[in-house]
Image 1: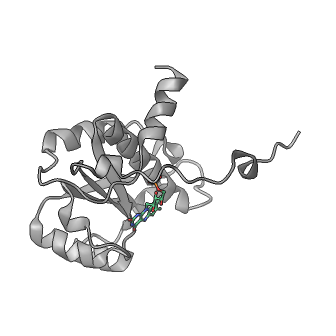
Image 2: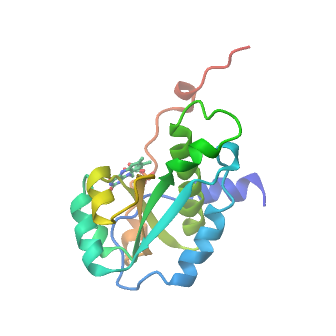
Length: 178
Ligand SMILES: Cc1cc2nc3c(=O)[nH]c(=O)nc-3n(C[C@H](O)[C@H](O)[C@H](O)COP(=O)(O)O)c2cc1C
């Protein structure tokens, strides 16, 4: 793969919030989770857990737990990613910033998002009220909610509704310390 291939994948990705009826299959989800598994993580602790939500009742409840937007129900599948905080005690080195467990989950979620783009599956991160999602899923105490991911097949026309990537100028985002 060349830089140009990867650049074009990143360029092609954007948040998709409306999907067609076709569900995302378990096989497709597992294909994406294989990518998540390859993500970097603090001390290789792999603290992520993916709750793959097909159950309509749970989806409805989780829509209410989302911070903005009411589109979760329309997704082909909804995934809630949690971090296993109990791994902090298992780390060989001191995990000096416990949030790094959550950052590791984000890295895995990014692999899923980019993989979905490559598979022509739309995706969007969904911010969740952590406590509410935690209660809805009846999670064990050591699991912390990191965020939600909607995945779905493109609704006709939605793939063309791009606003483009509005981004700050490149020069504003770096400082070289030489
Ligand atoms: C941590 C995080 C939380 C986000 N939360 C939401 C959300 O709750 N609902 C939503 O519609 N989009 C959410 N997004 C998507 C952003 O709105 C989107 O990435 C941003 O506007 C840039 O657009 P693009 O992804 O199409 O390039 C979130 C993205 C990130 C990384």
